[in-house]
Length: 206
Picture 1 (cartoon, rainbow, N blue to C red):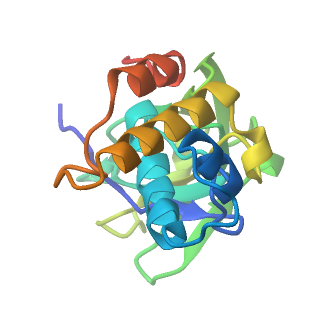
Picture 2: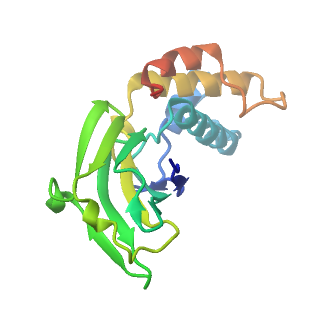
């Protein structure tokens, strides 16, 4: 059986790009006086790098973000290849769309559940989407990116919502980098302490 090609858009933040750990918190764990500002730019850059590594390690964004999953799910003569999709690292499904040959879209959202599709939860960050109305896959579908799923991930709209274990791992990572700031690998390596704190939130394999 043909396997549908899957592509992902980049995660797009729904909220302002705010540091997960504040500059004051960073200075405290690095034993830097709050009135010393010489390294502020570097510390904020380290915070950004550490937060990005945390997100990559656990497998999904820390703050509310959305992305589109694109699939080519039809084959000649326009019959569905699959009607079930496992979505990893997803908080919720915002809606689905089918792209038509004329460039238009048929859009479906929560108002169309369960007539068009249903979403079940097998894990906190793993969802299963099932198409309940295969007639949406019509012969008029565009051949590429014909089926699109918009999803959301993240813990919340601001850093307060991010679990303390993740924040502590970020802070400890920054402190380690700051202590060894002459090392060329600063901003790349993840310490064992950070991994241990983040592992609870790491996306489970399915």
